[in-house]
Every structure is written in structure tokens, then in C-alpha cells.
Image (cartoon, rainbow, N blue to C red):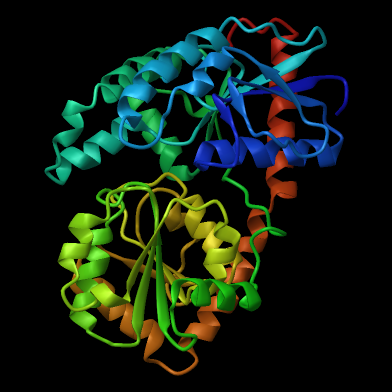
Length: 389
């Protein structure tokens, strides 16, 4: 396990964002295993865990904002610039396997965190066309067609069985080139902590005995916040409170909440989700498209049952009546499910226990072993000159 180095490539090596967090935790897990690894990035956190080695490239890209008002313009500049720069990075002299999180044109293993073609398909199906105004979608489509459709990698990691099917459907990736490895979570960071939950409720002025519903996303529209607000308006229960975490514009949703507005808290972007999850009684995500939904699994690890749509990897681990319930993007249906969770004796406690038990199968020690095993398989092909890969 120590005769080669795993090199991860990701534009931002931080804990902000889904793919970024996966790369971060994976690097830590490799270190715990004794597996040599390094990270290629243009931006990294000021404080790195352990002895993780970061190989900086195109550091000037870190000064271009990718969040906030001009985020689309920033991404339009940063994404292609880093993709090209990382494709010519100097790799370690020792034998190596490159794991890209979609940020370089070629490599050994590409982790597919989302399938843009399927995402846009779902938006068209639901009548959403505003994405046409965002040139990033065209850029990503061209990049994915080259990297995935062109089979520029030896293996593709799908974070769920659904993603595996989407890779085969949209890009004709052969099934033997796809490995299904779910995202992992840090079970030490995300765990049931009632003490933290009480602190968070006090911070936001939420009563200790409130039925607190949590929603987390930076895309309120695609993730279905409007449907959740409709559900709470329909319930009209004064004990229900809603905590919304994310950087999207809250104003349209505040206007929707005629009855529940005073019991709805917009927390903005947060980097302490391990504190916020334990404050909630239930996590709700009526999303139109997911590939795994890391936030749903993090919520479960904190003992919070999940109500989510049957999309992407969620359907692989969300089991009705065990750790939550499948919902639809319909306010009435969500309201009914909230009633099933809160108004039946002992239902909530049973779901919490089921959520914690489910999360135990997604810890990083197990997930990182799957990555190393795949890397060893690729290593044999890479240095044996297999012409078919």
C-alpha cells in the first residue's frame, strides 16, 4: 500500500462544498491508513490537517470569487483555467495514481459527483429554463463530453448506482469502467450532540420544545425550499419552526411564508454544520436532482431523520419508516409526512435510531479502503501498459 502515491486534483482543497469536503476527508483517511497521497489545488485552507501535502498551481485563481453576486462569472473564469493548468501539472517521480474530482482533462480515476446532463434533463422536465442564461452549463457540457464521453480516464467513480446508470446512458461509459463508491462522512465530526443542539436553538431564538425542521442548500429553487414552506403553511402548527442554511436569496421565500414567517430562520452560509444538525428534529430535502446528498447522510449521522425525494443516491439508503420517509415535491405530501413523524407516539425516536445505524456504514475508513483498492487495480494497468485502458 505504500509503493505508490495517490494524487487528488481539485480546484479548492477546503471544507466548503460537497466535492471539496469529499477530497478533504479522503486525504485525511489516506493518511490514517498510511497511504502516501498529495493534493493538487489552486486554493487550500489556511490550516491543513495532519501532514497533508498540497501541490499549489495557478494560485492567482484563489483571488477570483466563486460565491456571491458574481459567482457565475467567477466560475466561468476559474473552472476552465484550472482545468487546463491541472492537466499539465508535474506529478510525483514515484509511481502514482491520479484521482480527479472533475477538475482536469485527463487522469486515472475521475470521481463523478454529479452528472450535468441529467441535471439539465430534470430542469427541462420541470419547465425550468433559466439555466440557459448561465454559460457555465455549456462549458461543463463540453468538458464532460470530452472527459467522460471521450473515456479519458481509466475508471470512473459513481457515488451511487443511479449515477452509474446516468454515465452509461448519457456518455456510453462501459460498465466495467465504472466503480460505485458512495461518499463517506466523518462519524466523529457528525454525531448526535444534544448539547450543541440546545446551543444552536438559543443562538437563533428557537424554543427548546419546538419541532424544528432543517433545510440545507445553496440552491433553494432546485432543492425545493418552496415546497417545504408550502407544507409548513399547510400544517399551520405553531410548534413548527424552520431553519434554512445556505447562501441563496431568501427574500422570495420570506414572502411565501404568510403564516410561518416569524418561525422561519435564514442562517446564511455556515461552516459549522456539525453544530446545526443536532438542533433539528427532522431534515427535509425535496430536491429535483441529487447524486448522493452528502447533507442527508450527515444529518442521519447526527441522529436526524430525513424526508427526501427519490432522486440519485438518496434512494439507496433512505428507507421508509426506518430512518425517514420518501417524499415528493408537493407541499401537501410533505405536510402529511411531517405529521407521520411528529404526531405518532415514539415514531420520531425510532427514526432517529435508524438514521444513526444507517450512517455507520458510510464512515471514511471503509470508503477510503474502497478507493485504495481501486487505485491498486488501476496501478497495475497503468504500469503494465494495458492498451485497452
